[in-house]
Image 1 (tube, one colour):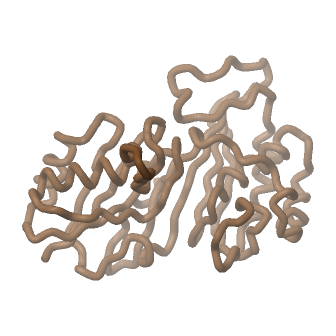
Image 2: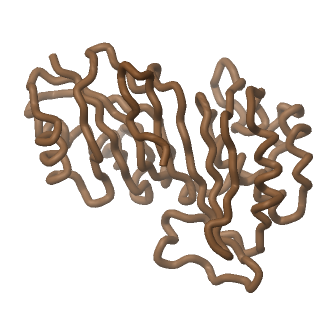
Length: 265
């Protein structure tokens, strides 16, 4: 039976995250997985299950989420994409589809992921809060220094225990992760972005990284504090968890035999 890999983008504002949620004695919550799975069923006309690579939280966005499903029907990928996008709501878009091996697993086969966190900040003149892109950027009223933030970010590159950068009772067997790049770049006089890529991420890890780097950008901490935050292995040592709206899953990379779902931009 053919198995399809989808590259999916969505604006997460009106979703309760990626993963399906069925509260007891209540209607299912609106999730990206639930909406996409129902739409795929309409197109292939049979029951299927959609598996996603990353369980993004409520309010978090994606440009390069990856999902996969198996069906008995052989459909041309371009036709599948057209059929899905004709039925999906306007806050979800399937960017591409390819046929993959029946054993392809979007979770366990992933080798690298990248996230981007976007911030509008006070800048030199005290910018007003964002309006037209307010659902996809986080606002910090005080000015931030992207240069010092970028210096601090370099201390996060490498293989570390990121216990300080995940919530308590995270439920993971290991908190060791490898970050292969972490950069802070000014994209305007009052805008910056934080780009992080690595082999995997803990719950809220990127949002806590962003909150910790923001403490440096405000001048509350110096860039060289990051090694001590890592060494503490204690959530209280790091900065706040920033809101979800500034975060976007950018791309997920797979081994050459399965291709790259969404290459780095």
